[in-house]
Image (cartoon, rainbow, N blue to C red; front, side):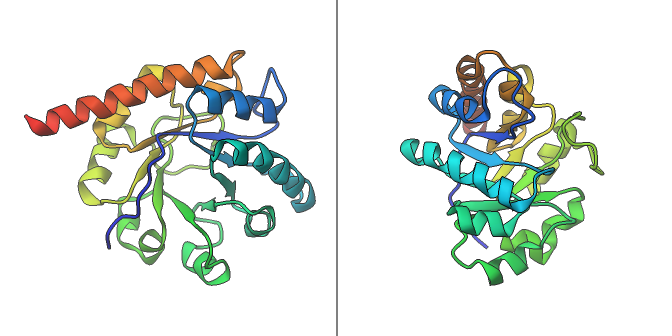
Length: 221
């Protein structure tokens, strides 16, 4: 199956709790100005009405910049907020079921924890794969495999699906992960915990772009 176009390079996973210095809406807007081009709202502790209220407020800002909103693991919030898509993991509603219940979904992400998942129906039904985590991280502790650079390379050699790398990603390691085969870098604390979200996003984007250029150059040799 031919991979769907995924033009995004810097993916922010945001929550109100993760933002240390500013309101999460302000963090999102500053991050967009710095280069973030897709945002996922992850509010694991919120009931659906509260989650939906935040999603609607965030989408108003994102729409001004034509940045897509992805909702983490809540199909009702994704549909009712008018989000572009949803991201799910292994214990969430399967991508095949999401396709049935929400055929209008534009961007469907799926996190993989085993190489064997590259060949299942859920992966085939998704638009991009989350490599989670690349490195161990305090923001997500319920994971099975820590992929590392070798894992990213292995996944890249086995699929044409767009790969979004997440898990303790920061400016100091983003370039290497992109060179290994990731198409997009997703971050939480690297931007949400930074006192200057705009500058943090700019630095990340620079490293990602450099990694993409290096990979392209290597392929020409």
